[in-house]
Image 1 (cartoon, rainbow, N blue to C red):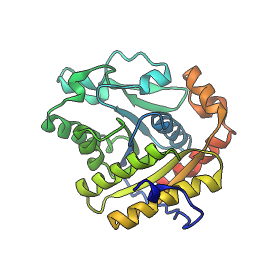
Image 2: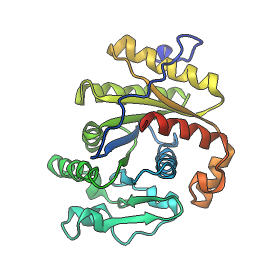
Image 3: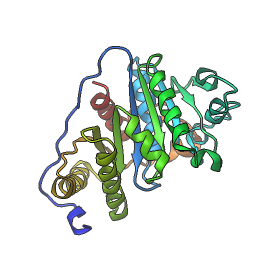
Image 4: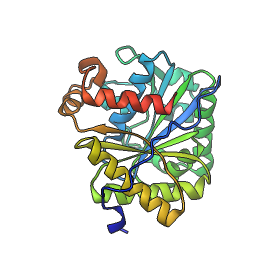
Length: 269
């Protein structure tokens, strides 16, 4: 299996925009990864800001149940969060904060809450229903899922209109991303699932990484998984994470910003 995921020169990945976004309601896009440390949350934040700058109404929801970190990366201190919504104390819209600098709305999770991470299946389905209902108010609802294959993560991924699986060229990242794609094919046969390569050394190496993962999916899963986009390694990304500031606010002309702009056009044509 590992040898099948080793990047090679051929075949080249397939860039496909996917189905065009239709009129209201909006779409629910989940962002997942097989392992932590691949830049998934940063990707979700940057995609949210990019879509907002294109005039879209965007809600970024933290679906990393139990280890929430969207608010941390943005330097937010939310008074209300998803747990308050699930307790019935407030409506979802009352828990939403507007991030003025980024131009998008945020629904925070609750960091360190084991209760959220071990929600009963029916409660997770309720979360999914709330987020799907939110597409009537927002053009795009971005759901930053927890890394890995927890049951709650799988249920939320299956509820999305589109699932983006973020991977790097590290063998463990590729293997774990393959596992996510395999399970999503079981949970949501025929669902819209796409690959995003992050931290690519350059465009050619990013394409080889994507092609390796696509080849494994085609060989073992008989599944054609398109490439939504790739983002090159950029030291300015680290700067924005340290400063808890969205990328486009400090480095709008960076290579990473340009790459995420292409990803945004693929996700929301």
